[in-house]
Image (cartoon, rainbow, N blue to C red):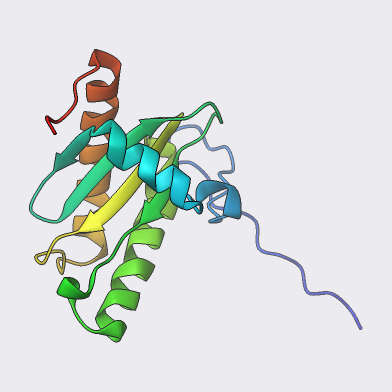
Length: 140
């Protein structure tokens, strides 16, 4: 049985080089300890769509963790929200600060769609990285 050819990755608009946009396991926060460290550090930024907790990592790439509560909606709504957040991260990963773990928590007004989540993610990740560099934290 012949194997189908795999499509080539999209090219970066800036350089014309190929960019791998897959959402691999290495880009995910999985352990409860990773989430706990991000929450304990208290480096938090937010807008009307998302709350983002940030933490430095030594991996050379950003990672995300998702925390979508039942306040956001039923199971179908929460799963759609998770899918959109993963897609937003996957599509803007190269525009995010490197060496940062991000825990994303959607707010009730997150329903602007993919473009709104991408815009929020890029802006908030940049603000969180600057906050980490300055050593600012939210008060307990």
